[in-house]
Length: 323
Ligand SMILES: Nc1ncnc2c1ncn2[C@@H]1O[C@H](COP(=O)(O)OP(=O)(O)O)[C@@H](O)[C@H]1O
Ligand SMILES: [Mg+2]
Image (cartoon, rainbow, N blue to C red):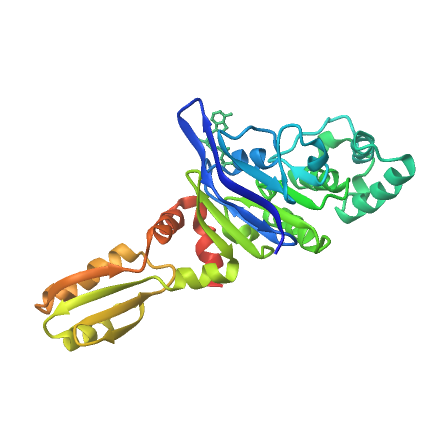
């Protein structure tokens, strides 16, 4: 599979102390819609600026369509459409005058501009406001105009930094619907801090936390991954009595005895695992068993995941995973 974006050990340290991007190895397949997720401050925008060659990495490198990205790669950047977070436009311009201006910057001829402009303005649903001044626009309209500008040059790769930020549910839906309708050969990297916002349209996701990629894979794999959260207990004593008591804990989806003294417990995806583990350990001690060992399949990736899940702003994660 050809990669549209590949980073190798990409690292950005600000002021010799703040590690905003930490050894990131990102692979975005051509034609995929890649959701780039992480809480605020995780390093999403910094990564995107590195991908675009707008920032120099402290270490590591970025390749886009197999070519190394540097601050001088203006030819390579022409293949990329970019929508920054909360884009700003000249308030006195209209969608037509602004897009015409951007088209000129790209060196499009008048004929090319006219035909691109009319089809883009229609596809981002700004036909009725095409000659209105931008200053009266809602956040959703500004985002759609930004999307039109990013698409003007028919980019092979589209990078959108939190396009749903500040939008109401209707605005979010229409923005995502628009992205979903784009040419399926186009590669899209879209960042967000809320999974449920973008998971509908993404084929793949990568989760960053504190500059590190803590998960990457398809949406389907991720859901299976989370659902598999389990712990294994090795006990000494009346394991059958212990198992009978486990049925009273709703959060345990199922459990299996593995041999005489080992029990594996599987949790529902949205369970506060630490609390359930405390309940389980309560039963161990009430039934007079000895706990020989406790092992968790929740490795460091999942740990980080759970921390993310607990964050207020990631509440959407749970909803998305439940679906
Ligand atoms: N130009 C900069 N100088 C110093 N620190 C920065 C700069 N840009 C971002 N940071 C810091 O890097 C971290 C990652 O920020 P950012 O990439 O904007 O995260 P996100 O987009 O995921 O919210 C934050 O701690 C932020 O304060
Ligand atoms: Mg950001």
